[in-house]
Amino acid sequence: MDSVRAHPDFEQKFSDNPDPYSREIAFDKIMKEVMLKRRKEEMELYKLHAQDPTFKAAFYQSLKNALQNPGLGSNV
Image (cartoon, rainbow, N blue to C red; front, side, top):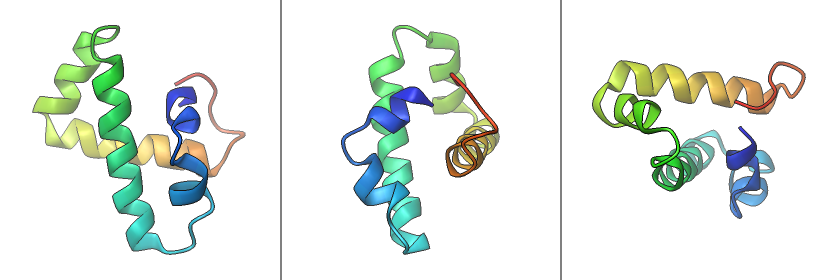
């Protein structure tokens, strides 16, 4: 979650963006970039992300919920 928040597009294109459609596109782009950067550190997570569409959808939804409700998560 910290890596997503640290992404240069997070504030403008996701957090402060009122348009749900472009927010979704921005989140997908941010997640892809973050996962590519972290793949060496967390290979199993990256494999699940890349190969299992159900896991990917649930993972993205969980992170979005945590990012939109800051009290719910910590270092995901």
